[in-house]
Image (cartoon, rainbow, N blue to C red; front, side, top):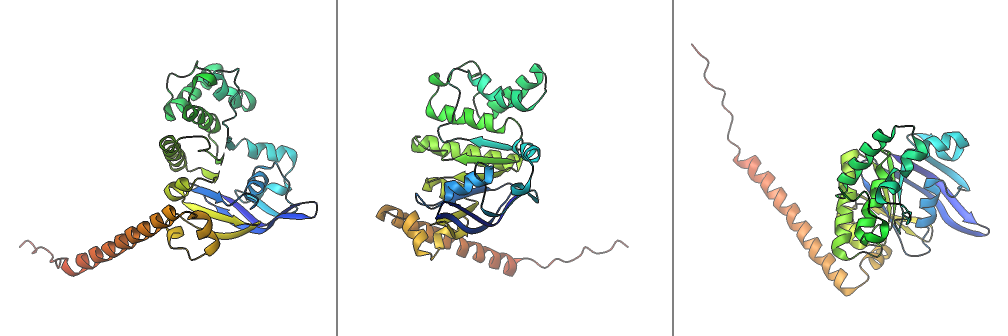
Length: 282
């Protein structure tokens, strides 16, 4: 879990983040959304230590990251995985060499131990046998999966993801979202995703933070966002007529599910047979 308390960050006279507080939970896909200039990228960079906040606290497992020494921060960073927007693979290295890079940097494992871990994470992202390929031989979706494999190779507690679906077709985007969600659930990672992709918001948004002009404007999940009355949020998420129609349809669908669940609960309660204990043996 990551807890942000009264975070403020500015550059010169311009304040970018205004007193933001939020909790990013383990085992959840925590999405940060907002238009350009909303402060979401600055917020993420503060979280990973690329920017030092002007005030406030960022707690990793209850310990304030902003007050740590250099050595203490290094220890926390070993628990952080990062998937960059453009995958950021080393083009002169093979898939295997890209994924093993963090292990070479941060562990003293034997070559055999490292390769066992590399093979395991490549298999987990459905890239078994792709070890010797170079990035130029991969599709956009495959490069994202290599990036995910590299990000989780150290068994991180925290995973930061910047625009995971940038440049991908809708079908591949859905597969990447599903993979990130599965890994988050499977390993109970605190996953933080910076995204503009509304499909991601609706499909994997366990916890969503909407930033507006440096403020946390709204907070909820992908079920609650459908029924939100926040006009700024609705204007941002459901900007087109098509998306507004889709929202209306999803509202009807969710309302129907809720009503059906209530009816089933009532039927179960009303129709449940009275439990009579069996006669005692004589």
